[in-house]
Length: 170
Image 1 (cartoon, rainbow, N blue to C red):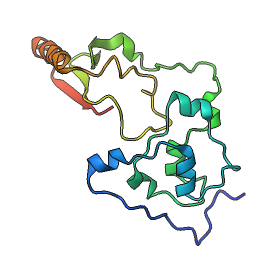
Image 2 (cartoon, rainbow, N blue to C red):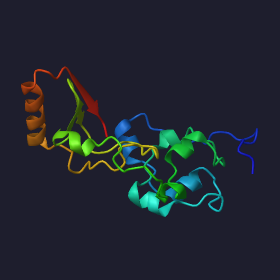
Image 3 (cartoon, helix red, strand yellow):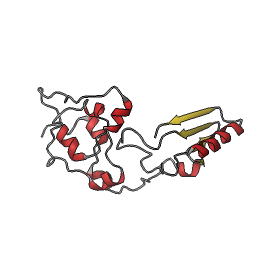
């Protein structure tokens, strides 16, 4: 089968909401539903069940609308598809390549570099990219409550060496 789409292949049309809250409420999370939307043959590329279990499919419909129907090689689809290969072990690869657990200063506050902190402001992303280096990050333990936010902000305020706060949405 050719990796190139046929000349007649067109992007699918899905009603895309301009409202981000609505878009988040209508995420595609089921691989079978994504295959149906994109008119993909499930026999050509099976769902990586272990990958789906470890890091579930999560993709906004406006992103799906940019994918090409019938094309398993579409780069946007490949970015989100839970592939069988993800469950394979590879020598030298680790779940926390940035060692972020060791740099947690307070719930949701990471400091890996002098003068700079990262504050997680949401416990999840709108899309799950398969290459995500934070896919194993413990967002449940790093989703600040109102009190924890106060603690994190006090930590930043008290450390005069911090000159940059990066807000992360997941």
